[in-house]
Length: 341
Image 1 (cartoon, rainbow, N blue to C red):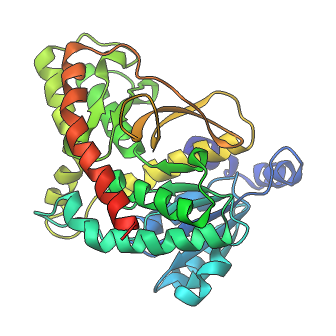
Image 2: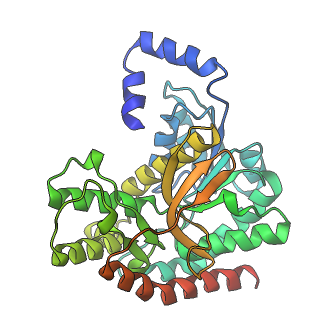
């Protein structure tokens, strides 16, 4: 995705070709909204979405500081027109006509905090933003980044149900950072080209609910059981690793923005009819007994085209699957309860 952006903006000639190509009917107009665009994830995510040639309109919203981010990003010579909106009164304007809404809004984790410690603050923010989405752009795809994703996705679903706008095919919890980390860590230990590595990650998006399926990694490397266990643990604790390394100065913002931009790009390709776009995401699901679950999802013109099953699991992965269910179930139920208070 990003390599093609960089190449395309390499010369005035190529820029001219790009502009002409984008003006054609082959690339539809797409409005993308980022809610929380002035935050630690929101700013780099705004930059990355400005670089995406599939975006024609980029709408940036936050409760403060959005005009500066919009002015800064808006000077970049790529396709999309940038608009900045600040404060509750302008949320509707930001959302109207959206094809895709990305939500990184909320507070970040600090050292010693679990994702559940974030719950009371971020749950309220997500609830209010979901009410606005249901009112102003009920047809949009929604990419939920705000943590704890295991609870915020069910909150959004319940709010949309109350509004009569819920479409389970259009609500996604963004778990792509777990996949990005699993690929990076696996490639590092396998001496493989990370660009060619794929690792599905299933379950949820916190601690032990994150289950990388290294038995299904490609290319397959013959790593020891102990190393697979260590890689699994590191993937599960990746967020904590960054929080501790930043020593109180933030959480995973840059890698999360990258992962968010990758998943948003996949959603846009799906909307535009590109075939065989498959990514892992936390969605409404029947592949386990839990109502929401992360697994491979085929993306298309309506959002979720197909939720793919888990495939063959190793014994270690089967154990991990059973071990995660209680925590994930509790997080889902916590979100549903909050939304209905």
